[in-house]
Length: 117
Image 1 (cartoon, rainbow, N blue to C red):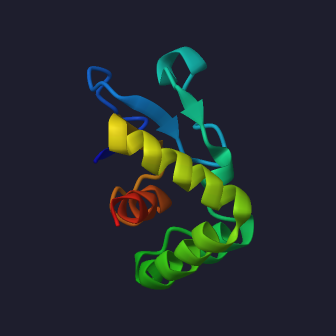
Image 2: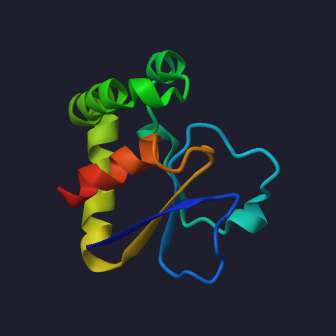
């Protein structure tokens, strides 16, 4: 299984694989041509209430991770999208693209961990 995390603003365009944006909103300043996405899975992003609560606070990340994993497991739409990603990652490299500045404490890192379980 090959899952790679890349910040869409810093992303090396030479890395191949199935390119999936996992943010709920489009990254500011990035055109669709620049993004070169295969898919935009906005449905897989954390709920608005969870994002608002987390507010990119690294101290809250362990609890955010726990709550977000619960969402991924219990929300039927999120669950189906994760299942699709897992199947794809078993066959090909998948690039999870996100816009967050913090490369460690973000929802894409949780998705990657979830896929690799």
